[in-house]
Image (cartoon, rainbow, N blue to C red; front, side, top):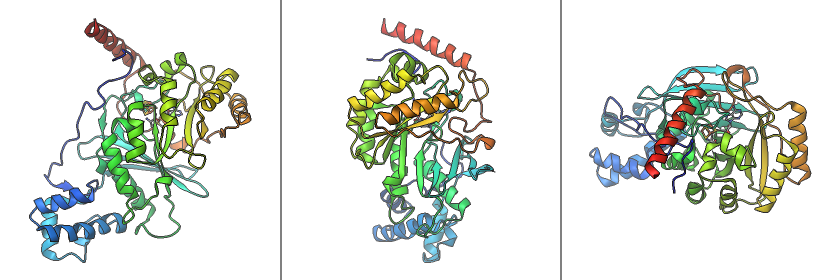
Length: 398
Ligand code: SAH
Ligand code: SF4
């Protein structure tokens, strides 16, 4: 049954457009699809198989961007590939480095749409925050991405392309070298990854491929706002770590700040977490919890959080995220003492609840502030659109 509310039931209003030059981008194609594409371009089956592994190695292991640089491929084969394919990288339109070492890239795709990608270096790891959509249809009330007007799914190539660009910028080819800075990936940029399931899955398979980028699934985390029906598939078909944007423990508050809750409620979400394959004490589920002053940060909220996690016997940790205000946002960040108190209650309940340090604030690289220069709509416009939709749905249902 469809429940009227702020949730947009059409996650993909605009498909990606094809390249203007008619060529196919290699980045983003699975091995099988690449082989098929080589055959379609005129190679026989044996040649297509051999060229696929050679090209795969050049693209994902060595990071070449030109087909002509693929030295062990004959001139004729290179010419054939070049006539039909490009390696394919998004264009960087802006690159910024924060005083704390965080880097942010604004990327432009072939159809002119833009998304952002952020690299956060730490002492023992470097995490790349990758976007899955341009904008997001889910309108979480504290999230800047939810205010963006343009929304489309990114292709698998555009998602993998973010990792390739980061490798380029960090000088980390070939991908087998020791001491790499980029060690971890989080699908926590713009967009809801489980509303773009196939592309995210295909992209992450390429990122995890041992003959290429080679990141272990233990070093990749997918964050969802709670698209419950897709969570089991994510576990079975991708198998990376799971993070869930919980942010509230009562129906009333979560309905307000994470509107997808009207469709998939807290209990349903936690049950899906309990069923998530591979979750155990060594690979815990992360609950993200943004600290909003006077909204979701009381002692009672903290106790309820512990109770819920225990009720479902979840191997879990909680990340407390200080709210990052943006121009026009409705909330304030909880004061530091409140955040500390909340954290200590959850810790006392036997659940790790570290407070996340905001990174890259000087370049607006923090969560929910990505692509700050993009087209936006006001909160009032969003509410009006939602109200109109609600009326529309009621009429349809009646
Ligand atoms: N759509 C997915 C992943 C992208 S959002 C999701 O919602 O999980 C990544 C994280 O940043 C989420 O936990 C999100 O709730 C949080 N976030 C969004 N806006 C924020 C803000 N202004 N301050 C702090 N965290 C924010
Ligand atoms: Fe979308 Fe996640 Fe932002 Fe919600 S928090 S609007 S799901 S990107």
